[in-house]
Length: 111
Image (cartoon, rainbow, N blue to C red; front, side):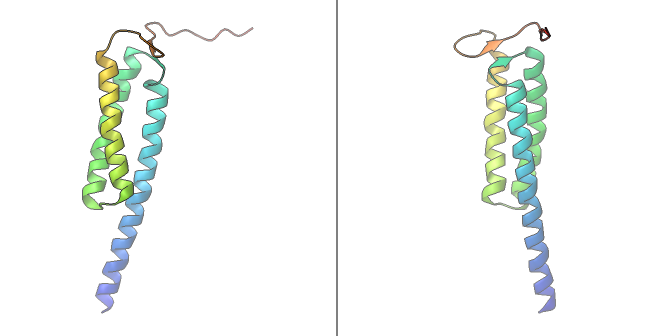
């Protein structure tokens, strides 16, 4: 009976740790999307974002396979969506609507 109890505990600990990992990955994904795939985009930033998101997606899929839950499914799905948006933006060289591609990085003017 004791072995079953410790197995249940380690399973619960694994689920908790993976859910925390999913939350951390989601925070990273949000930051990447905001910093590099936001309204003003650069080709270099989009390439960097696509690479980072690919790594997040791989880790998110591993978490979901190890411990399926709403949290791990959420980051897995969000990483697929983020990757699709970053790749589409990278392949779209036209500035239109609210989004624009900044080909030169401008330094802020300090008065």
